[in-house]
Amino acid sequence: MNYLLHQRGRASIAFLSDLRGLSDRFEARTDQRAREAGIDPENLPDDPEQLQAVVAPVLEADPEFRVLRMCRDWTLEQHGKVAMDAFEEIRDEVEPQLQALQKGTATLSYADELQPPEYWEGFEFHKSTGGWDGHDYMGFVHGELIHRHMVNPSFAGMIYAVRKSVAEAAPVSSPAKILDVGCCSGQYTQGIAEVFPDSELWACDLSARQLEQAQRYANEHGLNWKLFQAAGEDLGLDDEQFDLVTSYAMFHEIPISASRANLQEYWRVLKPGGYAVVGDVKAYHAYDNYDRWKADYWNQVHGGDPFWREYAATDLAELALQAGFAEATWQGLGERQYPFVLIAKKGNANV
Amino acid sequence: MSEHNLRADDLDRLGQALITLTKELWVVKDRVRILEATLAEAGVMVPDAVDRFQPGAELSESLSADRALLIEHVLGALTTDR
Image 1 (cartoon, rainbow over the protein chains, first blue to last red):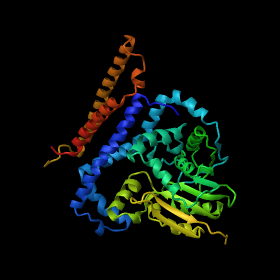
Image 2 (tube, rainbow over the protein chains, first blue to last red):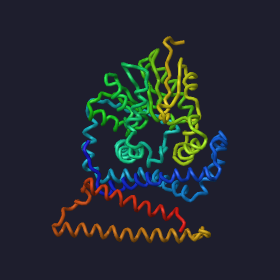
Image 3 (cartoon, rainbow over the protein chains, first blue to last red):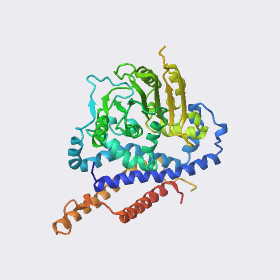
Image 4 (tube, rainbow over the protein chains, first blue to last red):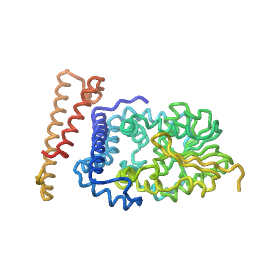
């Protein structure tokens, strides 16, 4: 797609991105002051609520920390609105392209009678205004304007490579048929397609607007993805047809009861000997207790991610074994241990 | 800073000041729009030229530095005792 942001959108997005980056510099100084105030990871409690009760008051007494929080709150609350405004400035130019890209090699099946799970209905993930379906082109607004222009710069331009690293971690060489669950606008699906270019690729999500953006990407690149609207815990597909079922950055957005149901559903649709590969944010046990407090504070407490804590504190490998998988590991990739990846194998013979 | 300059009951006046600042910002925005229209009418530039203008590398760098300075000045005033 060809588009150039107009002045207001370009300047507003640049401001938002820079405000986030510049205020992030405060974090090292507030960490230092936490240490000076006697916060020692070795002596902090493990329980998340107790951890919050001990650490948060110390940091919140620091004016620089309060400004850091104010900046992060402001960027979280504003990013959706800013991106939607930027879209309206270029709507007349991009809308014909977006509509044209709905036609092509990829198929998209909408659910006839979708009953959205309680955790999804009406929720604004990451405080994105209106949620995943809050705009007629929310897939482009979120997947393109927000991710490419705001999120990617704050991850040093690495978000697409990080997503792809999860597909690269799958212990399969040439899976015939792959399912990506919770594909959103198709960014992880792109990584899967690059790693496994010869596989038949299916992908689902609850959000129709995000699926439409995934379809546009696939059509633009001549990819014959089979996209469909469904929840991971109720795929509506036949048993035992996929060699690999995978997901990225979805489990921390849903309650553990839904994660358990997802894994049971992945097991059901996998062929015997097939793999489930689930990439997501870092597990709490991989942090020291101060960094764990930060992850919990900025995501669970202040980041609009109500299920972050229960995801990060649950042993996903154990959950996969309970769901019926024969083998399972859950560990971080590389030196940074990010992202964390569950690799679970379905037994060769059904029991 | 030994004492706080502002107290909780100053918040309403801070809100009033914020609205006043918003009004002044609007006066500047209005003036920029008038300036663009005047320049377009005089044939100096085409309508929408500013909206569609894409800064080159040098200007982008300069804008980025100015933007960072503005943010740092405002955040600095919020966090630094004088």
